[in-house]
Length: 472
Image (cartoon, rainbow, N blue to C red; front, side, top):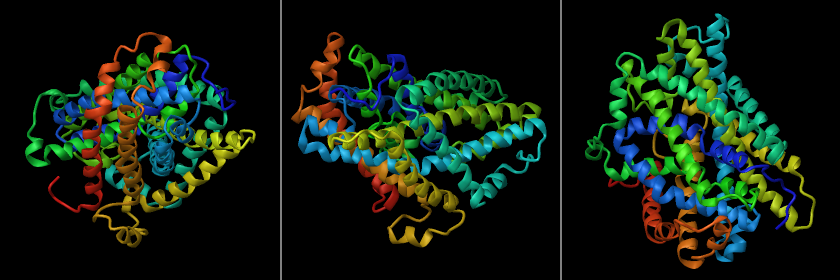
């Protein structure tokens, strides 16, 4: 289908945008703290298994579905099998939930990037080298300042998406992704050369399954599975949208390998940037979401005069990663809305639709920012009415619907569709660039392996929020 929503100018641009969507806070924030709380090596091993048997087939399915139909999630599923159109709606809803807390976290990253820059020059707007926990707590509970940083991050996202596929998304990604990788390597080298850093590397790479006796393997599976969906942007509408902008000469199997491999490499490097530093300074590796902002800032504060420099570099790379993912989320949502305009015979209005989704993100981000990760307590009564387990905050609510429920459910329905009802639907599209070499492997994953994993992930994530049983 010829469409005027936009096109990538090159396969490299597509890959940088897709990798950028995958490489985000899920890698640089979520991966290290979930790995720290889930046993290190055991978590990493399960994550890698899931990336091979679930991640690769789903990525191949999503980008190929998008390219074959030339449409975003809703209309792409409708074209493939009308019975699964609901899954297109699920995937289109995901970015609306994700971006609500993503902008808040992006705002936090900007604050820390600026604060470390201030410390380099001894400016009053730096951290002042106050206690890292107190600095973080003071900022997230600050109300309007925290909200405004989230709004600033949202505005940047909106402006790039309004620029279009090639003029905005591709142009940004082709610069940001290589820059991110270079900055990440710099931080990894510094982290791994700290005295005592070896313990962190051992935590990551030395076989150790003691966590299974404590948390249990199902909880580790749930953590690794939700991380994989969030990190790879699976079942979020983004990859289908990006696939619809891709030229017919691109090799889909190669793309589907490069994206998860690059994403996993960055995730592992992020772990190598965080864990050695955390162990070197005797900080708890399972410190939760605050690991990125409290524990690591404490590390930078203890590095002496070079600390602010590495702090600025680190938070700058997290900013690039977060912004590239935020762009992908927004594009997944508005691409579906552009399809709806085309279906009605209307001219595509990217600017208007981006502003509409931006408004939704503004409302959600304001709620999450005002909540301050539960520090303000202003939304606690409403959380209680939802039946949330004690200790949950509004970030958890949006995360539950997106990463916890809709993403694994969307992956499950896609696997059922491509594994059973439309088993050979992708083959002719993939074979435009050569033989479908992994066809047998992908078929087995769609039919048997993927659904089993995704069912477990779905129920473990549901239980993690509502705590209706202590069995897993």
